[in-house]
Length: 311
Ligand code: GDP
Image (cartoon, rainbow, N blue to C red; front, side, top):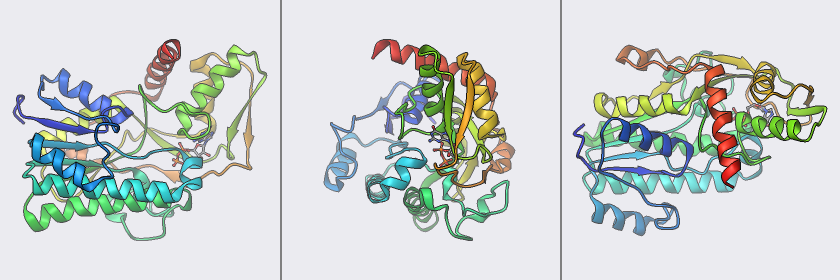
């Protein structure tokens, strides 16, 4: 990629979009465009088409999405499916029509069937039923990655997709109920420490296994792929670092400095039992994650503390 080319990052206020902008700037890219959701509602087709006609970016990173943790996903499937389908269709189609050269669509590891063989390989897509707690989000992401793939195969566009594992880091959503597990627990353990609460409740049984990727590592992978990959086949982007929710909770308690006890609340859903990706395809191309879970959690907690000082 040329450092002066115009790159549109959709979703620049989110955790992924903001990390991608940090990485692009670090690597010398200056001509980055973005719009807040108030300025440009990506679910409105005409507005999206107008934006692409006016701005004519050379490259696009599609990191905009309605996201949330296990509870938000299972409580609002309508919004998760509709919003994410509209965003993906509008942006990918308008980019193709406006002559965008390169597009990177971001999905998620929840696209895989609930009981697919682990580590999850790209070939397992659409081989079985999805995990019900995030089916709506997954269906929208599968539609987006397929649209990207079809534009690549049928129309020869350099449109590519990456599927990251569970992400965490600066600018995460720390909502008490609607966030993902790491920000949710950082907040809960921090508040328990401040209030001298003896016990923290963690959802589910503690046995599910998850793979976590620090968002700056994903951002490096995205810039790497924009510059070096054109394949129609989407790629997994994971750290390979797997941990049970129980061990994760202990690690977060240690990072935050909470010394009370942890209780599991089995009335809350566990979700899929295991979700670790095989990232050998992207590793063979030359990318590997750098940040250990320990180190990443420390950075995430620091950014949480800074954010709570400001707000
Ligand atoms: P998932 O990978 O789509 O299931 O995403 P989540 O990050 O929402 O949840 C991961 C796992 O952490 C699930 O087994 C949850 O039940 C568990 N978990 C434990 N405590 C929490 C919490 O406070 N918030 C969330 N979101 N999940 C939690």
